[in-house]
Image (cartoon, rainbow, N blue to C red):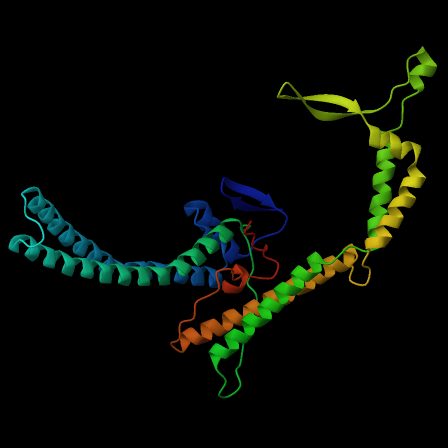
Length: 335
């Protein structure tokens, strides 16, 4: 048994930690920076991404100041125009027309400055969202996570890296579609019938009348009740009502099961259906292939950056792929 750290201090863990893990634990316990939970390579990349965002935001300073300056000048002229109106000077008066010409010119400058600021700000927005997503993900991680092996992607001679990224993203979508298809596939009739029988057995047991008190003490036979929501004079309350469905299931269990068997047979689609185990396996396989495809995409994005070409990441890119974390790291949860 060894010691580790959480946000509140040292705790026992079931294995010894490497020197690198001890450093990460100590840094996180001191600064509470989620990046300190990451292994060295992932931490370095995360900090580099944070710096990219900070630099991009710093670039906004100049257009933001230009926009503020243009608005201030325009608003001063607007006040002068309002003063002229209050003193009976309107369009056609030389003083008013001169100020109006200046106002129109400054309004055009405000629009240009605003468009430039909006354009640059829009380019930064996805980067900021990506960093916020990474921050949330790393904050949820355990204090020790491992690195995945680096992905080496060699493009054929003359191949376009942009085309390779597009192809990788098409593969990513294919794997996502496969996950959704496995989730949406119908259940097998055998599985549904098994659950249905268990449900009817449970209903029948809950609907069984109690006769023991009648035998032992001469009491009335007790029929089961179930809680229900009731309304009396527009007021909501709760009361116990007879459990009619349970009683029917107890009285006619076999007939009810047979009827439901027939109803299920009418709508079953066993040709497209998956058992629970098959569904889990297909989802797990598709998720594994999805993460592999996302790792390839990230490797291509890094190759492009090294060649001077900046390609933005998808807003929903897997943090494990971006930070090169091991497959065993928790999946991201966006819900």
